[in-house]
Length: 349
Ligand SMILES: [Zn+2]
Ligand SMILES: [Zn+2]
Picture 1: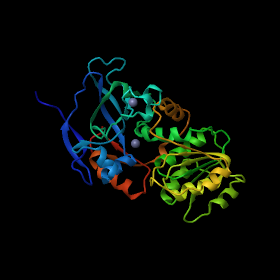
Picture 2: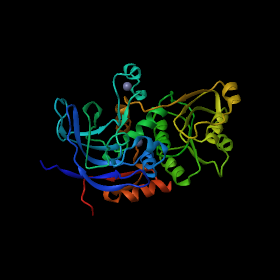
Picture 3: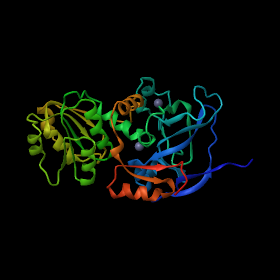
Picture 4: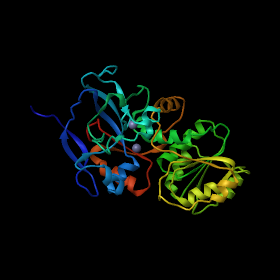
């Protein structure tokens, strides 16, 4: 039997770079769904896979299709799949969990002991088609902008972190203006925070944070955070901190800028060991909470926030046809980008 072929962005060998290849269209097995991909977004972890760091080498098995941020439509249902229809707009939860471990049973599926990442531990979505278990399929409302839905995975990380603590009327400091930090600015403002201040050293990204509604976007190389706090009338410090840079300097500056009883959620993963300002953590009675995995039950919140007026389009800085994926990765590698969206449906102009 002749196998149908498709275009896909593949990690061809254990080393730097990616390649556009012709590969077989996956066949959905029992309980699986084949999705025709419309749009994809490049994640920071795709850049790690591109560059082939230690983490990538431990997970990805070349030749393998990568990518996990996408939106598309149901193309084919495997045996036994019900409740979905061909042509229905969908995205997919990228974490395929075991359903049997203690964390899965306790409802903390984001901590599954034995999870597989789409586009990381198995073939991904930077392709004309992707195949995932039916239980990972997320139905997406037709009125949502597909470009925005393409990066709901990253938006999910930002949502999980930003909504970890109550925000209404609170003053929030975000350290790190990568795409997730920039998205978190919008979420915090939408969720009722009073002041949202973000720090970074990259002017391009600080500018995106301003477009997302940051009250102050502070370049820590040029500006002094305490004087910005003064001008923002933050006399007692921040109530909530969202650490998204992985930098010890940023986290310690945050600890110093928190008010008594302040709460910090940590998402940025940098060096495994760093020196922390323990004196301030203890004397101010701060709470530090690690954010691990990604809450998988927040897809509905993400849709409703966008439908309720949270505009994420400023986060999208580059749009390419998938055949120009290299340009998209170059933009991500330059550091001067927000989300990069690749189109898989139109013919190349
Ligand atoms: Zn991602
Ligand atoms: Zn599990």
